[in-house]
Figure: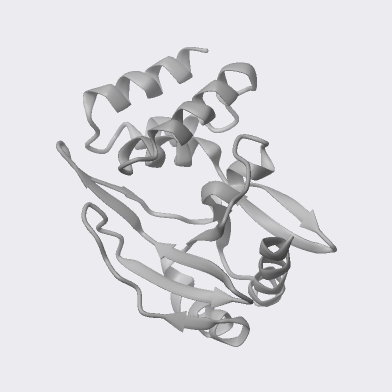
Length: 184
């Protein structure tokens, strides 16, 4: 798959420098067989590693003009193209909703595992984080439902991240769904 080739190139660059990052979005869901046919790469990055990650990304791809759209309030948002594949790089991912702003401040604690692709180790973001994010991102509720279904039949590995999410402003409906997951 072309997308995996691009991910390998990125992984080689970022892991070589011991940077904090993880795969998220639809490609993460694809890893768990929750979603088919991902068409881009979403990376969560630690704020402390923004400059070296941007440098590494510029070595494997071309930076594009990143357009910020409502309701996103992400502090660090960059877009690249790596061998024809779009890559979104996000640090301090944030989204505004009717109760305030939810922010995911990514660090190594949000990495739950690694996927080996042709000898390159790709860190994986927590599904629990993406369960919350997809409920807040417009037109992504279907992905949240797929994660919820997955978590109903597989153990929640990071309940601490869901508890941490509950410390922030969230719509009542999102709080209800998180509480339901935590009860399983």
